[in-house]
Length: 199
Ligand SMILES: O=C(CO)[C@@H](O)[C@H](O)[C@H](O)[C@H](O)COP(=O)(O)O
Ligand SMILES: [Zn+2]
Image: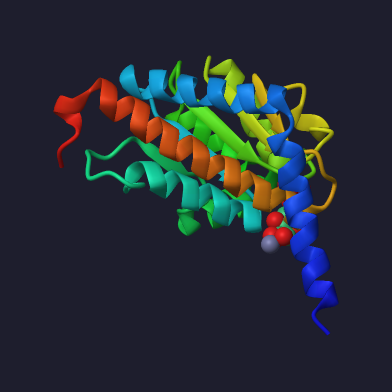
């Protein structure tokens, strides 16, 4: 009766095992950690976007920075782009759903800010358009995708592509690596700037 449950847990472990053995991908996680630390040091912000479950993941990861992960420390400037429903319904209604994230980046984005887009297919048009706008703004783009990277591959400065084509398994690894990045950023940023560690 529990066989299918075991198979699904095994599938999640197997995807994560492949991530664990992919040295290039792990190096990239380290690089992305460092560019986020540098961005925060320079007073830049980190924005996250995604659709469906990946919107929830975007919101979750942004809150680790703006709220806290492990440490009691000052807030870091990070936000997920789907959180204002008045904005989303207006822009989707008056312009296009494909523009909801690009327009916010047009309004908020500054050179050196980071945009992290989570998409299992890599093909969500609203994320691809936001990445193109981020590049116009001299921001840094980081794609969290499935194995091909889809259409986000071309517009991602850094592409964390999970070696799977199965949406939920990809999302589970996105959150694993996302949590690791949040922990390492918090450790590196606040060990550098201990005076800013308080509330
Ligand atoms: O959470 C899930 C599936 O696990 C769904 O809500 C899923 O995120 C949605 O179908 C998304 O619209 C898929 O978009 P994407 O990952 O291809 O960008
Ligand atoms: Zn889901």
